[in-house]
Amino acid sequence: MARYTDSVCKLCRNEGLKLFLKGSRCYTTKCAIERRRYPTGQHGQDRKKQSEYAIQLREKQKVRRFYGVLEKKFSSYFEEATRQKAVPTGLRLLQLLEVRLDNIVHRAGFAPSRAQARQLILHGHFAVNGNKVTIPSYQLKLGQEVTPRENSKKLVKTLMEENPATGAPRWMVFDAEALKASISQLPAREDLDPTIKEALIVEFYSR
Image (cartoon, rainbow, N blue to C red; front, side, top):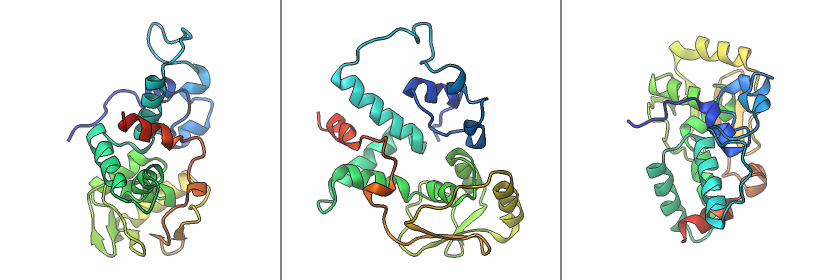
């Protein structure tokens, strides 16, 4: 399986904002973008005017990296989103990304970052409706429950204690005592990151 192996802090610097790829470290002064708020490379500090295409590309790359999705998978999500005529393509794209199992594990506070959520899922630490799932991109449906497996509860509780979450989003149901999380409804646009400009992504793929 293809995966990104370089420093994830470079991704944040190249996009010019925090993508919160390293969990709790991103909230400290050790965060790379706090110390060097400019792109990596020899000419990273040069100021250049970006073309319309470059702006669209950067927005697409930012969202792709934020959710930790490779290009081929991201493109397939966009194609699926275009087939949903009842919902704007940009919103549907974000909804498809939000209901991924790795994102739900992170949003619930079971893991401090999506990268760690993916690792935990791949190692078989989580179940959906009682059945072990080892596919981070698994798409959850409304009402399906995500729980740590019995032998993994101690590990998950330790992670939650070391990295206190700010609380699950309102479109999720989370029971901290029972360690259960589920989707009660698909997220509305106001529930999602306001800094994401999904219209630019739609324009990029519509060229």
